[in-house]
Amino acid sequence: MNAFQTNEPPLIRIVDDEERMRESLAFMLRQEGFECAMYPSAEAFLREDSPSRPGCLLLDVQMDGMTGLELQEEMNRRGMTLPIVFLSAHGDLDMAVDTMRRGAAAFIQKTADRARLMEAIVSAVERSSAPSKNPGEEIARWQSLTDREREVAELIAEGLLNREVGERLGGISVKTVQVHRGEVCRKLGVKGASGIAQAVRSVKRILREEK
Image 1: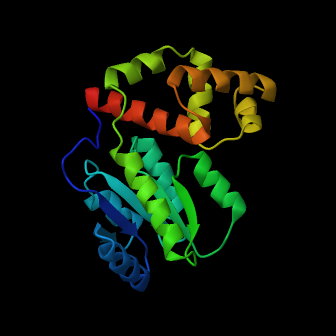
Image 2 (image 1 turned 30 degrees about the vertical axis):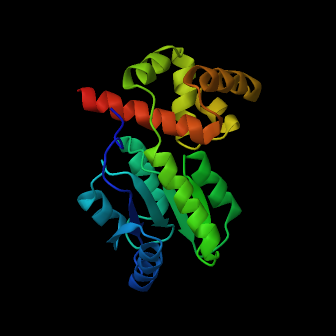
């Protein structure tokens, strides 16, 4: 069963260590008709949030304690599939690319206008609420991968570039990684690094729940 198959309305989680920013975002979202939950830290989110409810996570990049990037890594490790919209005070292109490779739904500057931010949020909410493949089908697709294809998929889900994947796998060529990556996408029925990352997280969650 999809972790987000529920009749509950979507919930927008706001994780930011600045109270003023949390309150400002919550005020805007409530005006748009969304329910919100606010957390002052990544640790509080992990401790208190209910992952079964659809929606998305508005996540500050730089925070005291666990950073937004570290929270994304931890969520990936746990197989949490809640879409993340990163909020950054600085337009760091490399960071944006890295978070998207790891499966983020969007990377938005805090100075972005309301329309752009709401577009990203609505897209993320729709992604969390969309019907997922049957869990049995997801596992069957995963099991159809070769051992090497699974290794490639898991490393891509960690955010590694093709070159870095090749180095981690004993120095295989970028071209070989690209061939494996193409097979992973074809067999899993996904597109791009973010699709692979989402599929890997979903499979890990299913396998964990079956234990």
